[in-house]
Image 1 (cartoon, rainbow, N blue to C red):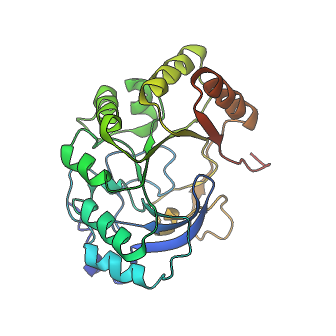
Image 2: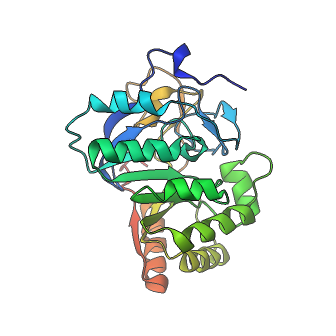
Image 3: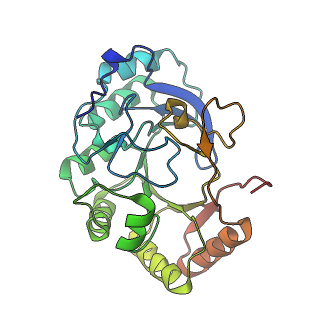
Length: 273
């Protein structure tokens, strides 16, 4: 296992930003994973670059005390939300509940967790996430084939596993649930219909439709945690990805809203896309 402890990387800070989020406003980032990118997915569009440590195992990557000490330097926390994301899948942090409790006690600001949903079958993860005010869950397709091609999960994770955990979490969670969906290409009518059926069952507060406007670093880059939208002033090689044109995003958003009544927001797309 790759050592991701911050003791070997004194320049690493678990708090970054604030960054401007089209979904959640002014967001202060919390990275509970550390300098080594660690995730149960290796998405083809990941803004971190290729994931270095691919796993579904939970462990303590960054001690809670280190996060809260770093967070104190950002007082008075003039942000809309404090977001756990960073260098991979935040629910892999075994101290997730402790971190969320500490953040809320220290800052009294709303907390958000961005998750790929692969750990939602774990009762402890669901208990930890119950502390968060908002949870945004990735759903980039409606089949095992899309999961394999787009998200590239670690062995042992399949589409049915993710959906079962998502529905179990939805049944008990009292906060705000968002669904984040990345479109790499237009979906056919059958895929859209199946997605709308799943969304109806989940009944999130909102859906966030996106397309990969952020270039992907060829190799892992720590500053990928932030919201770069171009390759300008990035001193390393990146690869631009094909985006869905705005008209297709907006048309799909309208279709979802008309058939479900759920609010859909679409990402702003640069004019050059």
